[in-house]
Length: 290
Image (cartoon, rainbow, N blue to C red):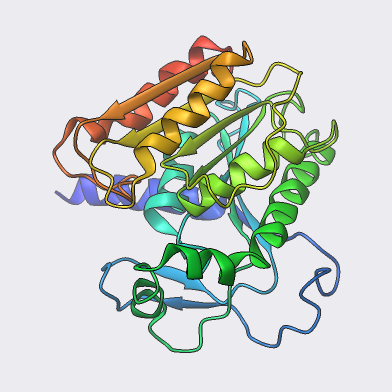
């Protein structure tokens, strides 16, 4: 037991050492110059997992694999949370840890969020989930800011690729739920300097996505969702897949019978628990694990 504990401590310390928080903008980000609230973390909530809220200064946290194991691929990760919170572990840092284990650099994005006025952001957000129309209206000014943060993150990673030991043509973007909205908005609105080379919307919320122009440059997409998603994301994921397929872009779709919404890296003892291994196989198929 002592040996196992020591090994876990060593692995944890290596992962912690790899962290680097990078501000995406100098000074106040355009569009939120007047925001006065500051980023906070809620550890005690009904989700029983840490969530970040009130992000006003967007950042990416870099998790870099050991240089001798790095394969040059990088992924920007956008956690979800209805544009009010970020599920920072199961849809962020846990994903980064798995990507690192495969030699892939990971960058967890904290994009700008709607202002939560209580110290229980999960309860506050859940109270709004019954009326998607009203929630979409509230989030409408936030989504473009979050998209801009995603595009800026890709640009930063590509611009600093050499220093980060990354191939500038092997940079992907993945996101969960609202982070999936950010993912699709990013890929629809990107230019050559900030376009991801591949994307992975995981149970993405499509109605709030900005744009619809599929890139002409080869941009493979990997889509995952559960059939019993309580928020109805399954048809949206099918629609995203079909758009890519019809455009003759490389596309892969996985629909698990069970898993619900927000499964992320959580273990439920269901087949959906293996989604990220399928993602790894897909990355390998497209040459991103070489």
